[in-house]
Image (cartoon, rainbow, N blue to C red):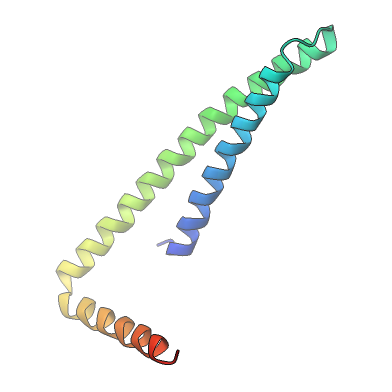
Amino acid sequence: MPDAASEVSKDKLVQDFKLVIADAEELLKATASQAGEKVSAARERIQDRLHTAKIKLAEAEEALLIRTREAAKATDEFVHDKPWYAVGIAAGVGLIVGMLIGRR
């Protein structure tokens, strides 16, 4: 089961990738007035790659969403199956957080 830090870093990666795609699209729009066969060919290649990247990004987001749902379901089942363990874990975490806050 993936840890929370891993899920957060994957979510951050997806967000960063979206920004890169948006920047590339903006660059393509800014160079739309440039003429020339090489520029046109490069723009077309970049547009194709951006389209592919968008599709892969959507697939990655879906996979991340599915894994998050699975983790939430597993946590819910654990809490329902072993409520006293969950209470103990929560109390332990609360104690540690309280001790850390109290040290300040």
